[in-house]
Amino acid sequence: MGIVFIAAGLAYGLLAPAPPVLAESPDELPPNQRLIRLDEIHEHNRTADTYWVFRGDKVYDITDWVPNHPGGEVILRAAGGSLEPYWNIFTIHQKQEVYDVLEQYFIARIDPRDLVDGKAPTGQVEDPFKNDPIRDSALIQHSERPCNSETPESELRSYITPTEKFYVRNHLWVPDLHEADSHRLTIELFDGEEVVYTVADLRKKFKEYSITATLQCSGNRRSHMTQASRPTVGLQWGVGAIGTATWTGVRLRDVLADAGLDLQDPDEDIKHLKFVGAEAYGASIPIDKAIDRHGDVLLAFSMNGQPLPRDHGFPLRVLVPGHVAARSVKWLSKIVISDEESTSQWQRRDYKCFGPNVRASHPDWDSAPAIQETPVQSAITSVRRVQADQLLDSALARVYGLEEDSVVLEGYAFAGGGRHIVRVDISPDRGHTWLQAQLQEDGAKMGASGSPDDHRAWAWRQWRAAVPATQVSGKFCVKATDDSYNVQPDTFEPTYNFRGNLANAWHRVPVSRDDRPS
Image (cartoon, rainbow, N blue to C red; front, side):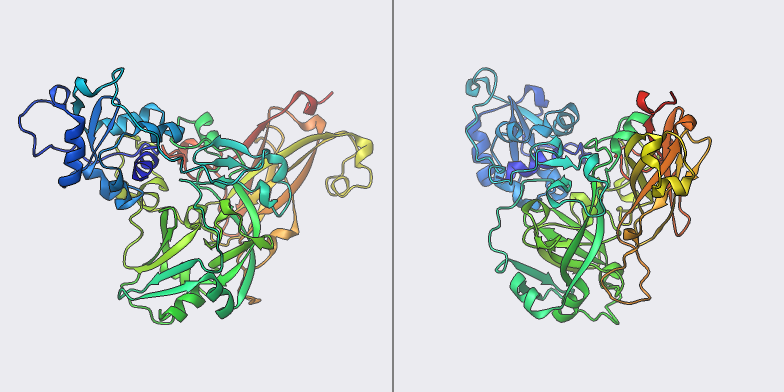
């Protein structure tokens, strides 16, 4: 199954190291002229220290790419096989940028005597997605394998996002884990010692906490950046790669203390906490966030009062509130206390931002820090025309002094790092004039520490606003401000990055014919 990991990594259009040099080549023929028999490939991968795969009639040496691969050394199980069957499953790979990455590893062609219709014969492989859960049909699907689907706008108007409508962000297949209580979590201390807990141990030994927190994919609204600026690499999410739930579990800091970490005076070389999922996903957070008494990092086993659904991490996940959702690793199997951040693809490459001048073909990956806290964000999720007689005695009519046909807008606003949303501004005319939206109070809930001094906000604020129909022209715009007075930029160009991460410029919605003045 290791080739699946090859395919998964190549899907992100990653830059490869320098093309490999085939040291054991018997001659100096260029790759296009060198021919290899299939039995040579199989024998090579049985005895050599380099690793070959093939696609079509071409052979690729992936040895130098193994250290940068999302699945780590699991891919070595694939040595000697064909990519074709797996790419037929992972259809997300069937794009030119993925093929271009693979070509950097081209070393030879397969001898024509072993080809059938111009290709090497491939066998059937087991579908790793066959046991994935069935998803709600209302979700807006961006890819089927792996599943990546966003919440429809109609389900983003409630403070708590319905569990079955909560957006799904998977990088690989969903691990087929059945037993919750017996699921094991290994914690590797800084000196290499390991401590193991089952989920049953966590429930029995530690106090449970519940917090309401918003998770947002770093690619939320990526499609808006693409449309308003330039093309971006990645799934083209709309406004629905975000959701809010009440999560229940035990505090990570409590478990780390029990395992042997000194929370008051940790070793000065300890900088990061690495998380590893059962399907090989990996990420990390700074140790300061992990052990902060008000950081509210949970080892969660419940979502909205029910066991975690499989798509959302059953039976155990990390919840890192205020940080990009990529750090809230699902299907958690291991935690490592470390002096360096995770070496995974998703920590060192995928979830980073670069300047508008940096092209996808030439990034210096080490020059950009991994995304942790998210910037201020807002979006419009509903626009509807309301007749004057429907507004009588309504709260909106009283707040905005409405006596005529109006347009009612609804949406969400969110800030990372525990920062509160203090204001949401609405414009009915492309940003020329503004008014303040009404903020709903649900978003002011505190964290799990129970301290009255804990003023951190982990959840979004829902908002509503109304505008007389006669004032509507052009496009509606929305922007939010947090309690550090961070505000969304008006356009995407200053924050453009080829990965399309953290797209948070003003959300603009065209005025429909029904919303214009009569």
